[in-house]
Length: 281
Image 1 (cartoon, rainbow, N blue to C red):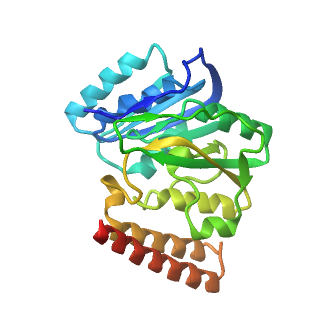
Image 2: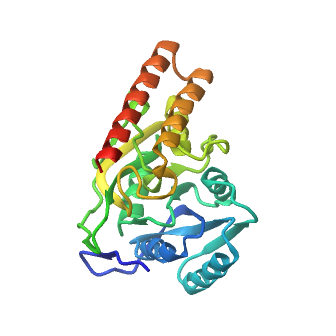
């Protein structure tokens, strides 16, 4: 049962709608999906389309999912895709991307949630800065039962451009913070179940599409920095996938060999640091 409750700073006003398709992969996570959908309902600018991809959940979870969608269908325009077997987050998000109808895509995991002004802020800023193809922001990790969300409103200068070099050394965006133009010719790598998001962000930025980041925390994650569960728990596997990612962008000639060696070495050092932190915990 969910315990965490987001306390909003002001009363919810009647929302408008933005030209965004929200994509939510779902895998046996009915216990947290309502929290994610509530954060969409509470948006001051709701997405015109919500796509949920059931990535091969067990039968009982599929039944719960359909009941949840039925409860929200009068408020949100929800489309459900169902996979017969688990394919992983890359394929699930790509399939949702294929049927998205809106010019912008926003990603939300079924165990995370958004600040009420997240879509309004991000959408309006990208509309005002048409040369930007992808944006993201910081996120808040929540561990307490009740969290008071701060008041965050739109500002013309709340996003700054992110450089290729900055992105190469550290993943700039957590997936639930990202909004991207639908027509970008890149997708999540279906052969990677970890670091697939980071690889996609790098392919976009290294192909000379512009990206920006905000320091505002407009998304909420309910797990620790290196993951208390799920895919991020396996630190060794995450480290190996990051190393594989750097190899892929080198093979695709996005970076030179000396830079590849540098990035590979830094990644190894970061992996060692994570192992030390986990041992101390």
